[in-house]
Length: 620
Ligand code: F6R
Image 1 (tube, protein in one colour):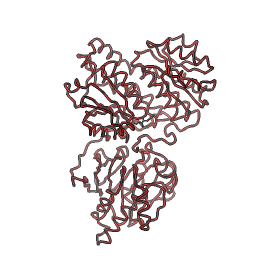
Image 2 (cartoon, rainbow, N blue to C red):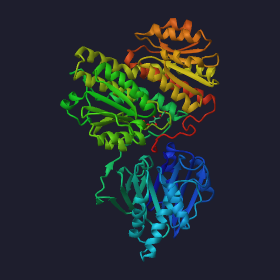
Image 3 (spheres, protein in one colour):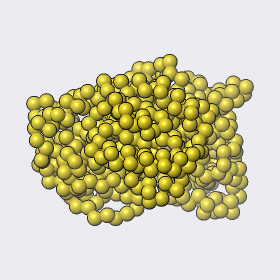
Image 4 (cartoon, helix red, strand yellow):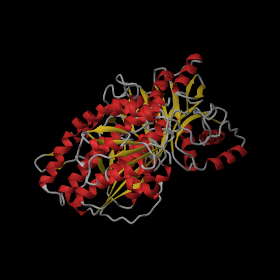
């Protein structure tokens, strides 16, 4: 949440900052701003609204200079206003900074600094940091230190930091110290781009693409002191460090829309390819099992595992629920799915035979990261199933599996979900083949899995039908989603997709639970989406549908091709290819993604930038 970008080098900073902010806009789009330093002055342009509005402002009132910082905001403290937009100014303009994270003790800092005469112009937690750094700088200056020296400015920051409680990624510039950019991280991601006589800082690597492929990911408590031609890395405890420069992997054109009107639709259509990518190189035909390069855990240790905990948030949590069913069915290992936001503060019994998987698209979700760290602290082997290479969770996990789904830009997660389920299926196969799963059973599963990219391609042919169904139901105020067994998590995911991008209230339930409460919501204006492909309890799901029909509720069914029976009961049917029960989530999720997409479009919602949301939830 919130995107930070900074630049120091020979080029004009403003165009680079604006380009970087456009690429980071998925992290928050409440407001945007930049600050550019030149000739002993720092000029600010900031505005509530999208980056394009800031761009218009900068066009009408240009800023020039080759050192600057920028920010795109997802509001935490303080409303969406121009004043609350970053960058924030400390003191009388000596310090200007941008922040991602939450300062928990900002109220105390604010009252302390107000007593000292600092004037607050915003309602943000960040402004307290700006004034605090300015106060430390002022104190050092009074003691005779030179405010135009790097050493003094860096000292002001290091003096201020121990007073902050909470999380931060900060990029800071100083009015009286030309050419110095300081970036520091505690809990919120930052990456440094190392170019030729220029340096960048950003919340993720996207603003660096096309400018440099040399990157250094900051760890917590690391500070980068940047000038055009200098980069010093300091750790709070260990002092000066040698930066671990990595080469950024980038797929050209990944961030382009490629003719699609929205990223969400593009990403839905990428799924045949992303599932193929998740499978590539991971099937061991000889042994009828899966193979993974980065688990970093011996077969012997894997055999000792007697319990698995999957932890995640949102859509990734829904994928984890599918994972629970797969792991218990194929590997016969008791598996629990924990909301990361709960697990991080709970203390469930775990032993060194419990293996924890953090499942995350971004690899930066604050709660998932905290839950993973808590488990690591207690000695559990902790692995990640992650999409974003180089992300904090990917780097801190003991090992893991990448999704290789490519950058997911649409705020509503789509391709990451089906890739996560694909990887979890491979994992269940792998752990199963070490235990009870027979060679023919493993071989069968592999055969079906290998078919999935082609089947998903065919599933996408339901698009026109989904559009028709959305046209009929998009004005509903409430929608119920019901599925059983492997399709129960899909019901939750379908409801989440609809809520987040079309703002229609939706609830997902295991279909049989309906009778225990939600059936009271059924009426002629409340459609129920039943996810009901063939499964061994198909007749039971039919009965659940009849119960809704009997109460006058319209029914939309997601059913298998060739199922004629369902057409005589449901009001509308969307057909998808027939696959094994345990692979159904990969198929049935797709019409629900498309349904939410079309409902959102028909309701005039911004599909890729839904209100109040951000792609990467880096605050608690
Ligand atoms: C929903 C969605 C969110 C994320 C959640 C976790 O469409 O995108 O619910 O799934 O914020 O994010 P990651 O997977 O990046 O940890």
